[in-house]
Length: 118
Image 1 (cartoon, rainbow, N blue to C red):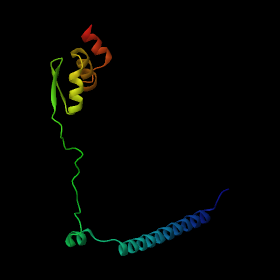
Image 2: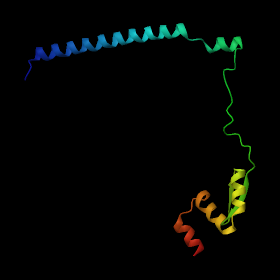
Image 3: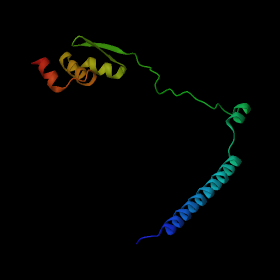
């Protein structure tokens, strides 16, 4: 279907008016939502001044309680942070421990480890 120039112009103006109306009402809804939220929210400054509770906390996820240990493998130092892992590695035979450290800590491939051991 072909439209004349006047019909195309009318369609463009109608669409423009529709978009403006949608945007205006969306703006009104946003203002209404913010007003409603502001009635129920409390400022953090108010809470901090009243000393109800601390507004921040310190997580202790990354605090290291274990003593790291170092192993020498292929002329490189490998540092293991976990005490439990260090104890488990110490119980292993030397050859097995070197294989595990090369594979998991030095990221050697099976091919490279195979070449080193012949």
